[in-house]
Length: 276
Image 1 (cartoon, rainbow, N blue to C red):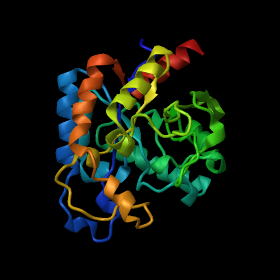
Image 2: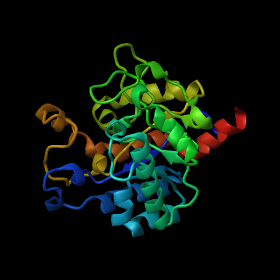
Image 3: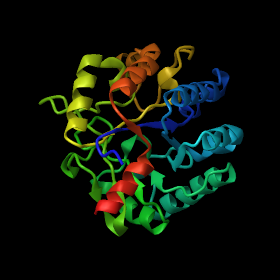
Image 4: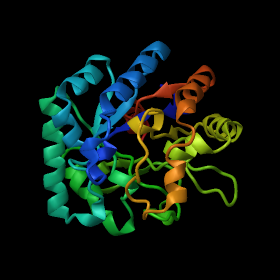
């Protein structure tokens, strides 16, 4: 099993759900998800799809296509609520609903979770215990740096075993001083110079470390209408970044695939459990 690899994932959510009158905008999740699936098949790789429960209920046949293609399903919250908006009991209920939605759509053996907006921080670390109690084996929910939204700078940059034996796989950050941002995730992957991304990924993999990634349906949606995205404080300059570089994502991933191994999260966690 490859240790140093790019852990490929898609956060399967519908951004329209958090936009005012979002249903009037074009439906993009099915088309963009199938675009990812097409390329993953062409490259011969498995990915992890962190799926919002509401999306699984809305598109059960799409979830079935993901399963049929051999990819891993994991949870991303039932309605994409950040952890600091939930009590531990509310989070437990949310996860049970998320699991049920994925299982009803054909998911089996679901072991992973990603907190919406990487909202697992020191203040919501209780979530690890809830996840372990529900039978999850891993989470990828921590951004281990200061961030305008959510971050846990003290967590550290490597995978750690948490409460109940649950593994936490934090987002992989650039190693350049003064640039503690994700190497291969969403807007950072689209906006930062690609040579810098390639260098950082190569450095991590050469050191035997995985590169934790995250992408969304909208990251490759070049047809999406212009609207203010959520969690940006209505800041136009930040919203502008949400639309930059979308046509580059799959081309950049294709280039990375030619140089580095790709892996689903569950496969890497199985390796961690075997050697720990």
